[in-house]
Image 1 (cartoon, rainbow, N blue to C red):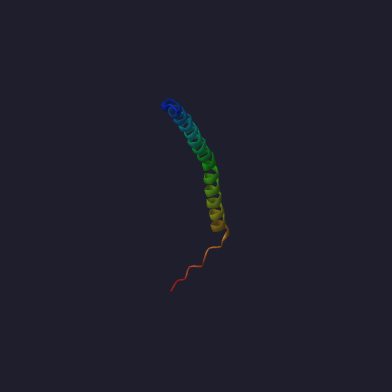
Image 2: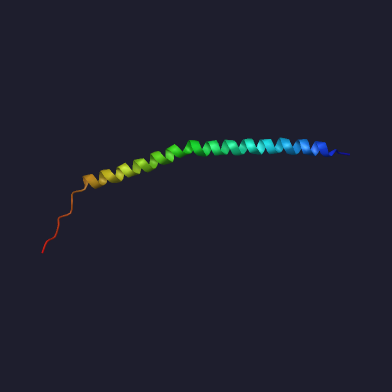
Amino acid sequence: MTHPETFLALHHARAAELRADADAYRLALTARRPRDLRARLGWTLVELGLRLATPPRPVLTR
């Protein structure tokens, strides 16, 4: 025969494990964000460099 206190103790232990996993996942996501920002900044600089390096189109006048 099992006691309800045993199930309650197991439930609390599993809930603590799940909370720790969720915290670790959130920390991993926040650690990855600067790379995303760095990539966006890098591509923005590439686009700016291409605009500066491309000669301007001649203006057509009538």
